[in-house]
Image (cartoon, rainbow, N blue to C red; front, side, top):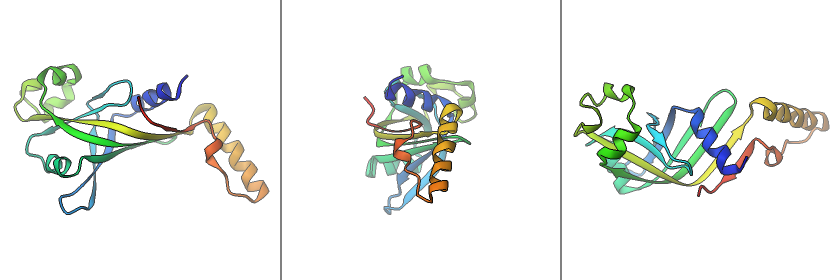
Amino acid sequence: MTTQERLDEMIDRFDTGMFISRSLEGKLRARPMAVAGHDEGGLLYFATRSGAEKLDEILHAPEVAVTFQDDNHYLSLSGKAKMKNDTQLARQIWSPAMKLWFPDGPDDPRLTLIVVDPDYAEFWDNGGLDKLEFLWEAGKAILKGEAMDDNYLSGNAKVKPD
């Protein structure tokens, strides 16, 4: 499996991420957002209401980060975000859960999509065999009294998405 395929597989694991942008005052802001969809290669889609403060933040400073975590998997993406009003795309990524915020469905005039085009990603997969590898390397480091170097773990990769 290629690193890009592993990245896509990691993105598939998560339905909610922490979306991090810069406030208009230049401070970092993080908020949980449901992932509306993603393309192979890392493009992420989020749905928000038009007029939301985060849209002004994206216009002011489009560089964002999105992070994901569960018990054994961690993913960080950073790149540029842009707003998109695209009913056809909204229909493609629509899920019934979105109706809570957009009762008129994908044609809801308040629906604005945020598209994140990552230029860098890093993931840590400590599940399955990768977890055993992690425990093995951690045990060796403890026994030797050394710091563990996680750069050599197969469950960790730095990716520049296609």
